[in-house]
Image 1: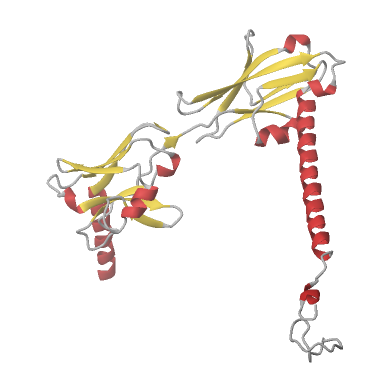
Image 2: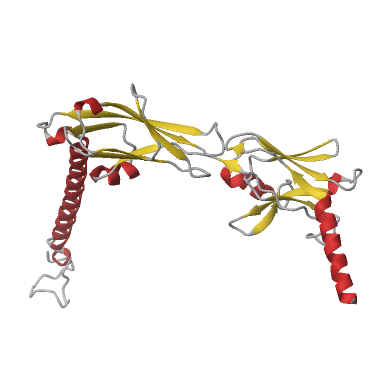
Length: 307
């Protein structure tokens, strides 16, 4: 019975102090790049001294809480990793300013009192800022060009032959799965999909196509990418199409790499053969003295070299 009472008291104290300190932040969705202000408040004691409270941020990589105030212990870490954060104390309030919030600075955050005997009891509940974002939209063509355009650059001008099958796909990275829409300039149709398929292209299919990515939560987050489609005659040369041009660029890059490898190999072989063909004539320059093992039979009485 006594143990149960102690446990209940401990839980009550924890909830009391955890509820007393809290982090107040934005109530609505936050878009990446916006200015955000967090405030540490005490909801129980109105005259609570906030000078003994500081902000902390959890490091996902180091698995440790870092204090955001600048002091002699975390000055360099604060300036290197959290340089865009600014902690201020104004009129007894503890504020944390994030001028341009990014996804990596979303949190979690907490407030901790330095006068507490137990850091867990006198710390607030964690608070994570819901940061929404959306990257630029990229358009790729299904087929040979996918491997090149996906990793190097997005398509802007697509040239195909009359009667070819074309499948375009647009994609982006966002905080939530976006909604995609395809449209064509001058037409009133809309395809609610990330893929656009044209089974057999005609001359009328030439024009500008736009893929729009819409964030499902934040209406202001919307990205677009426009691609120009050109339909060539059926008897057009293969190198005039986008696929042919990419094949030519890949072939040219392969030939250039082969030339570099062959040239480097030939240069190394030449250097090796030159070093092996040198004659060591140091023995011919060695002086031969009288009474030495290398001396020749001579009647000369001097000690000058017989060279």
